[in-house]
Amino acid sequence: MYIIMPHLAYIRSSKMKSFLYDPKFGSIVETDGRRLVNSTKPIFSFGFTELRYDGAIRTVKLDDESRNLTDDEVTELDGFIDSIVVNESVSVQWDINVNQRLYLTNTDWYVTRFAETGIEIPAEIIAKRAEARSAIIALDSVV
Image (cartoon, rainbow, N blue to C red; front, side, top):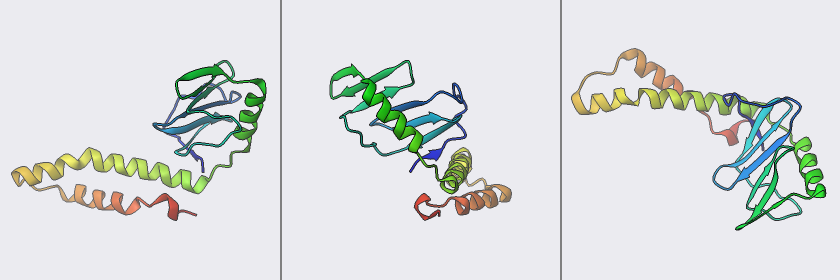
């Protein structure tokens, strides 16, 4: 399932399609002015360990060997990009989760300070951290 990444601001062109797969982070697709992500490796008729495509760059890597995509492989990749269905609900929740986890990360120092020095965490921070934790929902539970 692909989700929208609204916090990744740079997208080259709403008309341009691009696809990047790297085993470290999964797939990133740009299409229709949106950046989409998926952590799984898609299945194509050709093997690959890494893949880059944006119209100008058309490279596929299988183990240690790189080569250009064939025209048929580009057609298959374009068809795959066009067939992606985005789960809007999961995308919204994913963005909420990212922002709430960022808030928790940015306020963790209050917890550390309290543990090390005994200086109280402001009540407002405690309340907002509790709100952040309750707003984070596992994506597999979002319909």
